[in-house]
Amino acid sequence: MRDSQIVGEQLARVLPQYNKPWFKVPHLLQLNLILLVPLLSSAVSGYDGSLINGIQSTPSFKTFFNNPSGSSLGFITAAQSMGSVAVLPVVGFLNDRIGRKWTLIAGILGVIISSIIQTVAPSYAVLIVSRVLVGISGMLATQPAAILITELAYPTHRGKFTSLFWTCYYLGAILAAWATFGTQKNLSTSNWSWRLPSILQALYPCIQAVFVFWLPESPRWLISKNRSAEARHILAKFHTGGDDQHELIEFEMKEITQTLRMEMEAKQTKWSALYSTAGNRRRLLIVCLIGGFAQWCGVAVVSYFLTLVLDTVGVTDPDTQTLINGLLQLFNFGMAVSAAFLVDRLGRRTLLLWSGFGMLASFIILTACAGVFDTTGNKGAGIVVIICIFTFFGAYDIGYTPLLFGYTTELLPFSIRAKGLTAEMVTIYGSLIVLAFVNPIALENIGWKYYLVFVVILVVICITTWFLFPETRGYSLEEIADIFDGPRDHHIELSKSEDKAAETHQGTNKTGVEFYEHNAKA
Image 1 (cartoon, rainbow, N blue to C red):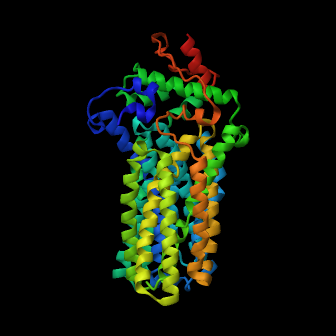
Image 2 (tube, helix red, strand yellow; image 1 turned 180 degrees about the vertical axis):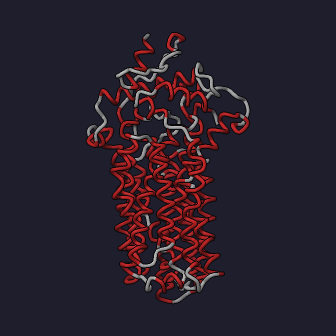
């Protein structure tokens, strides 16, 4: 696939021509390896969702916490989302004040500490507190990670990396699912059947903690903080192998600076910027819809309450339930990774449409067969329900798993990117809190009929995606603004006289954008 089809003609013209795979280019290999650190942040959320699913099936967990059900079971799930929502305004502030990297580090350390508390929880109350802390820390680790990946990735790799971000959710889900399966099989009468999977939640954050200090800060953030020389050095080191005179580096520096200047002139720095213009209002609507659709499509029922869903079709054996959960996570990961490598070939909008219609078809069949099983006890119908769970997740995985943050991060300009992602996460975790209480109660009281609600919602999702969601393939981050704000001049001069822009600038009181432009003119 040609570079111009991925990043557009103008940026493609200044890309280095290596004529060999990226993994044979040392600086690109180094960059892509270090980006694995923020990629693992989504595994924390994946581990948590699959962990709660798995330990719900273990008899020792049920006995230790007095058989939680209904709202008490829902509260265990909702507590994590409550912590995430509570810290969201602070995450946006920290991202812009201390930077993406240090906010990420705070989250990594927090997840490790809260996982230890959850493991040794002596009571239901302490378990809930640990779940809230997991939510707070997980948000601090997740939100800046998505931004860092977008702002550090090599231009032609950006789409794949941003799509892989939420795909790594299933790395956590796989570990949790098989950990609970193993402990259920071998430690079923011991409290370690749920304590051991709980402490393993700290595994991925520990790996991140070892390597995070090699992760660079966002060049866009550095320029916004009057540190243009550092930004140039990072871009040159990882994008052109240290050649800070290369056309690509000048292009990126000027494009970032131009975008930041335009945003500063428009004073798009307050929360009101999210709805101050028609373009931003449309962005906010799409971002919130993506976040809401990702939970209200029915995935929250299956992902957090798979045990209850399996109960409705007669699969009640704990070993079988944890095995299905483990196999499902492996299937999910394979589907999501495949989709992540197709985002530049098929486009974001196409994958979201395929995802919506695939989920709708799966849920219609799932609902019908669940109803047949409930009224007739037909085992064949129950088996079809299990198959539909897999096809539903397959459809979800090709769209919402890789694009949940990858797509929305592309839509948001720098000045409102952190705040826009915060709005998306409020929608996501607000939905999870509501559904965490509603789902178990509805499943216990009306069973399969509850699935009809999501069939209707999926119809709305398909219609909305068709008419509202734009394609972003083939545009740079800055050019995507044209879709929402109208055309502007993107031509960036690369004159030799400006090659030394943004050199060290100790003692200046100018903003990063102002200083860079001052040096460029000099």
